Length: 630
Ligand code: ATP
Ligand code: MG
Image 1 (spheres, protein in one colour):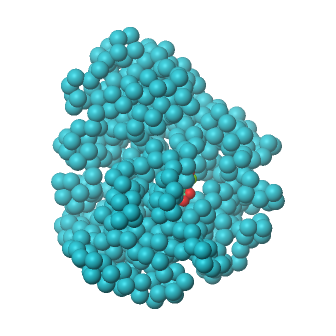
Image 2 (cartoon, rainbow, N blue to C red):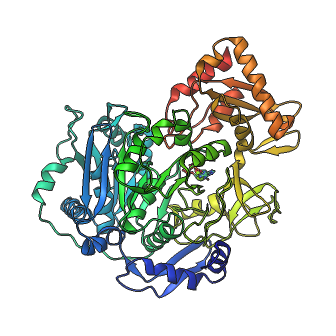
Image 3 (cartoon, rainbow, N blue to C red):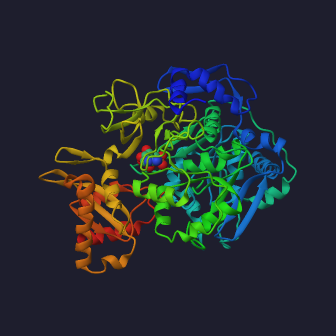
């Protein structure tokens, strides 16, 4: 048994030996001849010459041995449906979908854009593309037509797979007119649109010659067999756009072999998920967590995966725990924003269910503040593991590796660099930070298997976006601000863009947010730095209270603001104290649940809020604008 440190060191010092071992976790049709080709930095190619297929590794190889075991478990609390597909059934459905693709003229290398709700057909659509070597590009269902049009023009799909509607909080959200609008706006026109008709939007528009019906074509392909297309390891599997928290989304291009190996290896060493168990990720297929840890990762590891359509609160806040009990979930994956929602609910909803199957809960996507982390782990009585990564990397960069060594969890920290990532914290001059010194997190390339190969169609943008932090050394960075303590535990303090410079002291937004979060009345908070003549910048907080009656009058607002100041003073000192705490009913977030601090900051400084195409609820910003004006 290695310690996590030895494991990490081995991966960095002997990458060829290390990754050759990890590569045994998947099936190869033809063996690779070179582990890593890094002859053209910063571009890296993994497992050169090897041939494999993601769909084969996720489905066929398990279907051959355990055809009747659970593979895909669909649970919708929106339509009250539950349906289980065994590995054999899943393979059959994917082959039918793949046959439909072929019938519509989709070939290897063509793009298939998927704009769908969380239904099994969306998974079939992804796997069918992977099966025939087409490149899928999933766009979060319900994105507005403008955002969708940009992605259509960037990916230039031969086929779009969509559905009449999604469901949200018990109501149908029609998609088809958004898609029609998007195709209208876009310069590129797909040859076909394959429609999965859920019967939720009866009168949706059908374009003759272009739109085709899934149920009809499936019926014609019931017995179709479509073999897997064996792809060279670095051939692309998919394109996925980043969340757009900091600006215009980037089209991340993923390879095939490196991704399969990285996921298989992460299931073992990070997620501790075993064949035959059940994985429950509450994310959406529109995000990277959905790609890696709803669709591909769990199935590659031979686990059953739950696809959940619904919110954490309907029919009641116990729903996720009820699912854990019913399907004996062993690994759960969610986001800090969901944990903060659950924290506002009565914990009895959690304790009502038998959670004995559950071994670990993972959290990623945003800083998991220390009070929420502590609350969640204590309430659950099992490790809650924060993991830090990005759409770009496809799998964790920082995490506790409980599959290697059961290191203690420090609340508020995603622990250590994951094997394969030579991740360090740098000063602005390119030298390395010492313990407890804030700096920019960056990885010395090559990036490990599974990470982006390039930005789709824009090699120059790949280099200029991610590899130009310093002249020397060459590093990959997505500009997150971080600190490492004397035991080697990392903390992500926020984005470098969001760092607040108060009279020469640099504070991450996360530090102040976490301090505010320590006040028991606060449910959620966003802090931004705003211009100040005297101090350069001052922090300003926008907070949602757990109980709105606590801020019913101007006097109560003043009193609570004072208490919050005192809480922050006690933790960070007066330097971190916000100039104001504004109590609001909601905060602006991206559809993937990330705080849009840049828009808040712009409003607070009286500027235009910028690109809002990925915002979840525009009314949050409207309300804040009114509040600031009056
Ligand atoms: P864009 O790159 O388009 O601005 P984005 O960075 O939000 O959007 P994602 O790939 O969805 O796109 O998010 C990755 C980012 O999310 C990370 O760079 C980091 O800022 C944040 N993040 C993810 N996980 C964590 C975590 N566990 N702790 C702190 N921050 C995290
Ligand atoms: Mg980013």
